[in-house]
Image (cartoon, rainbow, N blue to C red; front, side):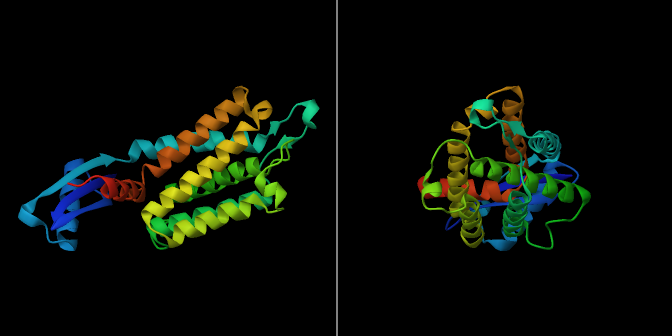
Length: 237
């Protein structure tokens, strides 16, 4: 069973590290994390705190929610007759961008050799790539509004890919900032797609996508590491 273990220890200054640990129990995972932390850092006065949590159920939630989200996205969302009566669903280009963005992020988080170690990792990779592709398609949906990217004739998917590259090259905090910008762009797009998404199917899609992505990210130590680093910038121990 896999556990996320957050460790905080005083090393002249405090250091924070989140680990993904394979263990039978939470206590064993915390013990292994303590050993890893002590090998990496010289802890002052054995002042080390650990907090472990299982990722098993988060993975199940991510699989179920993302599967529903992807099925709904592939069915598509029809716009009203007054808006041209078109169907919005991810196309091949958006899906390819989704695959590239996912691979960039997962390789940064887990490394190439640890990214696809079992069938669950592969299924989640497919679902996450398609989910990202469906969100990208919402950004480029031809609805009756003119945005900044329309004015400069830039495919917004390229801008999102650039954010992923910056996140890949940058630190954990920079990755969180890039993720926040992406969420802002998606929120802006959704706010202009009310006639398409503000129904039962659209709301279910949005809820499942959000729950699936959050559950998936919460099973990765990099998310905790980013928030721990961010907290360290503002909170002194």
